[in-house]
Image (cartoon, rainbow, N blue to C red):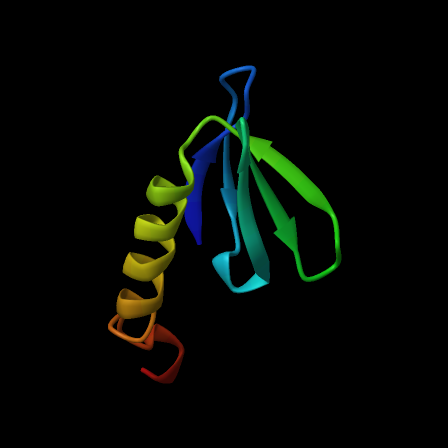
Length: 67
């Protein structure tokens, strides 16, 4: 999950696994695997950086369900 900001300043959390692609036109548009689109305040590079960090770290969290 990555934290992003809508253009009105509202923070939200997005499941980065659902990102299909990111475009800059001139705002940053994120298209999800469902083909829904979200416009965010972050640059495409910031979205990319957060997504890469998420992918690197998602398996590093301890599995608290097993014990």
